[in-house]
Length: 135
Image (cartoon, rainbow, N blue to C red; front, side, top):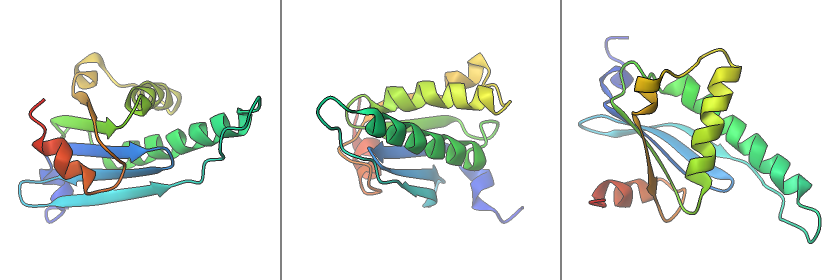
Protein backbone atom coordinates (compact mmCIF):
# COMPACT_ATOMS: atom_id res chain seq x y z
CA UNK A 1 0.00 0.00 0.00
CA UNK A 2 2.90 2.39 0.56
CA UNK A 3 3.73 2.33 -3.13
CA UNK A 4 0.14 2.81 -4.25
CA UNK A 5 -0.01 6.21 -5.99
CA UNK A 6 -3.74 6.42 -5.29
CA UNK A 7 -2.98 7.20 -1.64
CA UNK A 8 -1.22 10.41 -2.74
CA UNK A 9 -3.99 11.59 -5.08
CA UNK A 10 -5.45 14.97 -4.17
CA UNK A 11 -8.13 15.21 -6.83
CA UNK A 12 -10.47 12.68 -8.41
CA UNK A 13 -12.15 13.38 -11.74
CA UNK A 14 -15.07 11.78 -13.55
CA UNK A 15 -15.35 12.82 -17.19
CA UNK A 16 -18.44 11.50 -18.96
CA UNK A 17 -21.00 11.73 -21.70
CA UNK A 18 -23.90 9.37 -22.42
CA UNK A 19 -22.50 5.85 -22.46
CA UNK A 20 -18.83 6.65 -21.74
CA UNK A 21 -17.12 7.66 -18.50
CA UNK A 22 -13.56 7.79 -17.18
CA UNK A 23 -12.87 7.75 -13.43
CA UNK A 24 -9.41 9.25 -12.85
CA UNK A 25 -7.19 10.09 -9.91
CA UNK A 26 -4.85 13.08 -10.23
CA UNK A 27 -1.53 12.96 -8.40
CA UNK A 28 1.06 15.74 -8.54
CA UNK A 29 2.99 13.81 -11.20
CA UNK A 30 0.42 11.86 -13.21
CA UNK A 31 -3.18 11.07 -14.03
CA UNK A 32 -4.30 7.53 -13.22
CA UNK A 33 -7.32 6.17 -15.07
CA UNK A 34 -8.95 3.87 -12.54
CA UNK A 35 -12.03 2.86 -14.53
CA UNK A 36 -13.41 3.22 -18.02
CA UNK A 37 -17.12 2.59 -18.29
CA UNK A 38 -18.49 2.05 -21.79
CA UNK A 39 -22.18 1.11 -22.02
CA UNK A 40 -24.41 0.92 -25.08
CA UNK A 41 -27.47 3.10 -24.56
CA UNK A 42 -30.48 2.59 -26.86
CA UNK A 43 -31.65 5.62 -28.83
CA UNK A 44 -34.79 7.50 -27.91
CA UNK A 45 -37.72 6.41 -30.05
CA UNK A 46 -40.79 8.46 -30.81
CA UNK A 47 -43.26 7.83 -28.01
CA UNK A 48 -41.11 5.13 -26.38
CA UNK A 49 -38.09 6.23 -24.37
CA UNK A 50 -38.28 3.51 -21.70
CA UNK A 51 -35.30 1.55 -23.00
CA UNK A 52 -33.24 4.75 -23.21
CA UNK A 53 -34.07 5.64 -19.59
CA UNK A 54 -33.18 2.11 -18.42
CA UNK A 55 -29.87 2.34 -20.30
CA UNK A 56 -29.02 5.68 -18.68
CA UNK A 57 -29.93 4.26 -15.25
CA UNK A 58 -27.69 1.21 -15.81
CA UNK A 59 -24.84 3.46 -17.00
CA UNK A 60 -25.14 5.74 -13.95
CA UNK A 61 -25.19 2.70 -11.64
CA UNK A 62 -21.94 1.45 -13.19
CA UNK A 63 -20.27 4.88 -12.85
CA UNK A 64 -21.40 5.22 -9.23
CA UNK A 65 -20.09 1.74 -8.38
CA UNK A 66 -16.71 2.64 -9.91
CA UNK A 67 -16.65 5.93 -7.99
CA UNK A 68 -17.34 4.18 -4.68
CA UNK A 69 -14.72 1.54 -5.44
CA UNK A 70 -11.89 3.83 -6.57
CA UNK A 71 -12.42 7.20 -4.84
CA UNK A 72 -11.56 7.38 -1.15
CA UNK A 73 -13.32 10.53 0.04
CA UNK A 74 -11.28 10.56 3.26
CA UNK A 75 -8.08 11.17 1.24
CA UNK A 76 -9.37 13.11 -1.78
CA UNK A 77 -9.71 16.89 -1.42
CA UNK A 78 -11.91 17.51 -4.48
CA UNK A 79 -13.98 15.43 -6.90
CA UNK A 80 -14.52 16.93 -10.37
CA UNK A 81 -17.57 15.72 -12.29
CA UNK A 82 -17.44 16.98 -15.86
CA UNK A 83 -19.84 16.42 -18.72
CA UNK A 84 -21.74 18.31 -21.33
CA UNK A 85 -25.38 19.10 -20.77
CA UNK A 86 -27.07 18.13 -17.52
CA UNK A 87 -25.57 14.66 -17.10
CA UNK A 88 -23.19 15.88 -14.36
CA UNK A 89 -26.09 17.01 -12.14
CA UNK A 90 -27.91 13.75 -12.86
CA UNK A 91 -24.79 11.74 -11.90
CA UNK A 92 -24.26 13.71 -8.69
CA UNK A 93 -27.82 13.17 -7.42
CA UNK A 94 -27.73 9.53 -8.54
CA UNK A 95 -24.37 9.04 -6.75
CA UNK A 96 -25.77 10.34 -3.46
CA UNK A 97 -28.80 8.04 -3.76
CA UNK A 98 -26.65 5.07 -4.83
CA UNK A 99 -24.19 5.54 -1.94
CA UNK A 100 -27.08 5.77 0.52
CA UNK A 101 -28.61 2.61 -0.95
CA UNK A 102 -25.25 0.79 -0.61
CA UNK A 103 -25.00 1.84 3.04
CA UNK A 104 -22.20 4.38 2.50
CA UNK A 105 -23.97 7.62 3.30
CA UNK A 106 -22.04 10.72 2.23
CA UNK A 107 -21.88 13.33 5.04
CA UNK A 108 -22.50 17.02 4.32
CA UNK A 109 -18.85 18.07 4.61
CA UNK A 110 -17.89 15.52 1.95
CA UNK A 111 -20.71 16.64 -0.36
CA UNK A 112 -18.93 20.00 -0.51
CA UNK A 113 -15.91 18.28 -2.11
CA UNK A 114 -17.83 17.72 -5.37
CA UNK A 115 -17.37 20.27 -8.16
CA UNK A 116 -19.62 20.05 -11.22
CA UNK A 117 -18.15 21.53 -14.40
CA UNK A 118 -18.55 21.46 -18.18
CA UNK A 119 -16.52 19.33 -20.60
CA UNK A 120 -16.86 18.84 -24.33
CA UNK A 121 -16.86 15.03 -24.18
CA UNK A 122 -16.38 12.02 -21.94
CA UNK A 123 -13.00 11.09 -23.37
CA UNK A 124 -9.84 11.28 -21.29
CA UNK A 125 -8.35 14.20 -23.24
CA UNK A 126 -11.32 16.37 -22.17
CA UNK A 127 -9.88 16.32 -18.64
CA UNK A 128 -7.06 18.60 -19.79
CA UNK A 129 -9.49 21.26 -21.00
CA UNK A 130 -11.48 20.97 -17.75
CA UNK A 131 -8.34 21.62 -15.70
CA UNK A 132 -7.28 24.54 -17.95
CA UNK A 133 -10.67 26.27 -17.66
CA UNK A 134 -10.35 29.23 -15.23
CA UNK A 135 -14.01 28.96 -14.19
